[in-house]
Length: 161
Image (cartoon, rainbow, N blue to C red):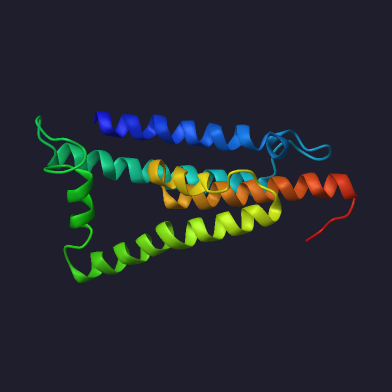
């Protein structure tokens, strides 16, 4: 269970790093509410994905880990967790899809798009996915984009859609 607590702490640290690296985006917009309904929706979806994932991760560790286990290999480890994701064709289909989305598309999209939009350290969204969830990383990135859009709209006075 210590590994889950460490994951949670690292996830919160990466989120704080992203916010700190992008203070201009995460400040209160000059006009409108501090947080939009769309931003709230993204955060709720991301948090729900993380909470549900942590629930299943907790169950996995509780059912598979032994007192002498370590989090890297052996019973209840990260390596065994990945292996169990490929135990049958249905699980393998979902696991390969998730792996491609999280390990290739998420960093590729957030890094390229983030640099184009002037987001500092956009690679951290991928790092956050390693400790939260892929759904959270995407939701947090999309919430950041909405917030940035509202700042730009306030600056230009134009409702860019």
